[in-house]
Image 1 (tube, rainbow, N blue to C red):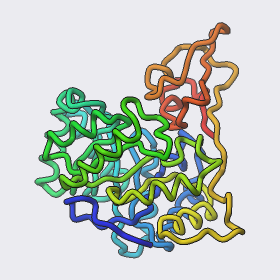
Image 2 (cartoon, rainbow, N blue to C red):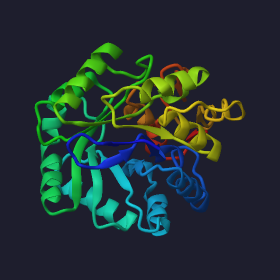
Image 3 (cartoon, helix red, strand yellow):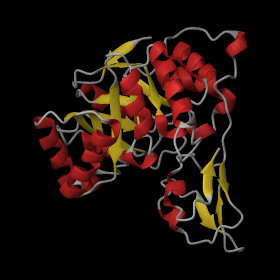
Image 4 (cartoon, rainbow, N blue to C red):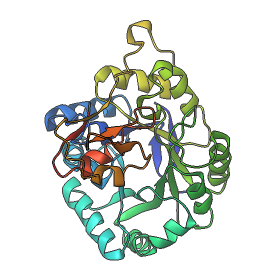
Length: 316
């Protein structure tokens, strides 16, 4: 496994970051023991960087992993939609308690859109900065699907880490072009921001060219790491090799291409709460009074599943 320093944070992370979204209740909903077994296997292969978020509800997997890690230094990043200092205090305390760790390595403001959005979350950001001074957080940053937010991060020296959507076709970008995003990220990296990418497979839309898409993502020298959701040992094997710049043996070809879809149960009541939180605007109310999805726009983040009050939405 190759390792890079995450910008100016001093954190040395594996080129492959294990994204926990796919393990939890918004997607595969793997039993705790099964999910932890996958994480442990990834650690054995050299992965030391793990990305999650409060909304993913995957802290229990990390809690168990840390207990079995045998003193290995693992880097954990999480995210929160908190806006105020009070909300962020609750988010940070929840993460520390449920992961059972005194500190969180990287804490991000979830899904920032622009300088205006970041300023709107000033209370939460300031709380994270105070927590960093106390040793409760080691680095502070943002996640985003927008070029504007990456550019905005350059205006905030206190933002040390950026977790942007980035893939070979620019799928899911909510503004600008792939070239715009790459240029912004290159500038951010040159300014000392730590970059780790998300959605390298475009939420599953790039599975037909998975190896090309992942090699493209891992080939971006401005990025320290690439976060990928994995559900099988074979997927881990493939992605470890790609992250290390190694060829993938024929017997592992297509092992990392488990296709997933968003499923809305037929008894959906059409309340629309899912659509209001979809970052891609992929959900719509059909003439039958039920919610439907534009599959070509959905990135399978599963945030709609978390919003559904009746648990009618699943990713599998």
